[in-house]
Image (cartoon, rainbow, N blue to C red; front, side, top):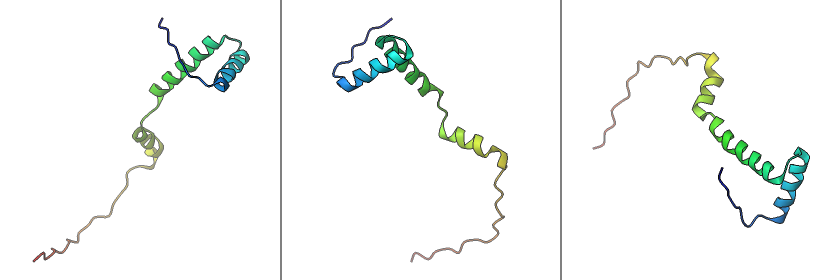
Amino acid sequence: MSIITVRGLDEQVVRLLKLRAAQEGRSMEAEVRSILTAAVAADGDQEGFGTFLTATFAGLGELELPRRDDIAAPVDLG
């Protein structure tokens, strides 16, 4: 297992980490380990925006566009 050191944490952050660890019934080190593990795991679980849109609108069917028979007039650039 690797060891990391985090310097420069605000005292308020350390106090809140200790409080959260106590509420969860574990050491501050175990709480930080849990937070980091959850944060990294959550990043891999997120689906892309395109996948979200496809799933959201899948039941609507295809978008039917009317046929275009008109031809655009050419532009005179001279």
